[in-house]
Length: 138
Image (cartoon, rainbow, N blue to C red):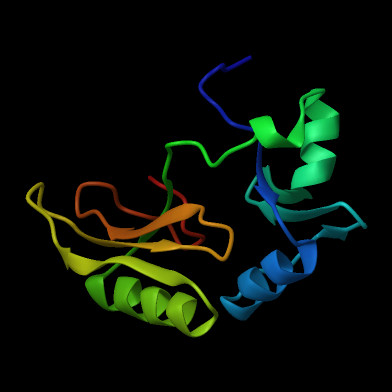
């Protein structure tokens, strides 16, 4: 089995309803909706939200020990225009601007937002990583 993979990304959120409303406003469609968790299909992976309380219980840790990790979730697009459109859609849905999209020193174009729970997303165009019709890196 290939070990270079991620099967599930789960973010701890203060409110399932708020997180779901934000992600649906930017175009995400949930696959499974339960009281403490919501899952989205992602081309062979799952992405989900778990209430902070439920996530702490699942991990066997006090809720006070949970925090937002130093990481970035990234979504690549086929053009700078698509980056700009996704960025604006996220801001209108309630995201907080972190860094507006700009040309990068490595030859791409990207900007950063924070979702309502503070999780950082990068919206990027990378000319060195082409995408197929479904948005997979080729």
